[in-house]
Image (cartoon, rainbow, N blue to C red):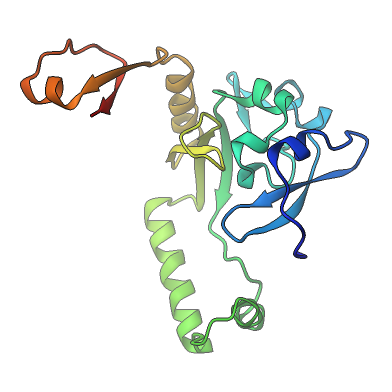
Length: 204
């Protein structure tokens, strides 16, 4: 990732849609990076569904790491509030110890596990994963709903596809939440009406 000049949201929105990628800021690192534009193959209607729930969608690269205010309007309109399932097997980010060591060095870690420590940690992680997911597969449910400012919210998981579909359907059938401001004074003396499916925002 090359350091570039920071850009504003307005500048981002003006970038040409004919380009293959667009530049968005990495707020944490203070740099910028390139992400692809939202395409037809990324749209919900072009995904595989099982019992009405999208499974392993073909999302654009960096979909899970894009601040919501830097997403394209079409992507927001298509995916906001729409849960989907990702099927995950126990895996490590590295193909070998040498790859792990190289990655740690690139990130500037002073202390790096020995090969024996690395293998023990990987084996322990696999055993823990298989204990929780005996089939060796985990079904994670995500939804772009503002629960996180820069990624889809993780909504839960299951050791079976049926269980994950139930989680997703529960989200789809959930009543829309209402937001009500409540003062600290009213909160203290209980002088406000408690309602179902309401998020109370505490104000001074």
